[in-house]
Length: 458
Image (tube, rainbow, N blue to C red; front, side):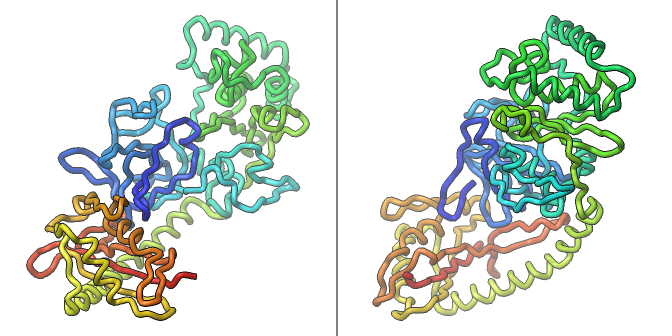
């Protein structure tokens, strides 16, 4: 995504998909070339993966945007992943999803584990305690902070529960696994056992008999876990689901961006079961996190929706006031003659010359605003323009910011907390999303406001 410093992020491995990504509120856009995503802050993702909940259904999909900002569809991405006709990342033909926080954006806290531990029933729920890095699991453990509950996961179907992983197996492997499961149940389970005892028996057998091995021949399937006895987390989770279903348990398979585990319903409560923890907890079965109740969230999905709608209710008025303020600033800049044109060959130097003339030579923050006509380019076209100054290339605000930092003007040294921001016209969509475009003057010419916040060197 193009950031304030004009950088882009290119994900090149499966672990990269679990790294922190911020997807700002925005909306899908389409032109003659294809689909692209317009962020609330005027940026759009390029040469990067982004998790987006474009239809605001609580589930985010992952999309790859090319160097021009358009999603790839029905192809293999430059880093080797498959995307379907909608552009969504797929594995084995299935769209990979994760829970979002609604309002057209997703959490950027994956892999951080920054939330404070919580204790329920004497059990500490923390990322360190769980031993895995994916915040999707952490979100379950922190319902008050993330407002995600087991019920939310089940309602949004961020799981599958077929009871088998047949699509990963050959016909021969399916027969071998089916025979193994039948024999295993007859040898380990009897009618006197409770669901809790059955679940624990399955869990303990996997912990004691299966080794974590990412070089295994069948690492993600129940065949790898049950027959080869070597697999990764998906193999453990598929095996637990297959054995659990064969024993009559209600089991779900949860797949996050870099981990898989299970939910199992025992005595009308959902429990987290993760036999892979034997690997994550230094192969110590005594340290394995097992079968603690997933605490219910302190807010329901309905309450969360009402909360979001309430937040959106006043957004139109806020945006209108902001637009009015920016238009007043643009009029002041025009009256001062602080007017520039995007196609001027010496644009950056001319803006900097005026900027330095306006900076007062003493130690306080200063705000300076200028009017920039875009050459009748609306948001998307203008936002893609790049400029070069002193070897730095990027969008105009990025170039100006890089050029002015550290400059000494009349004894005033511009500090690195100074900034240059483009002020856009904002509008609110029917779903509450805020999006941006250029302003237009009375003649219909497009313009934006260049806003400098100049702070002294500290």
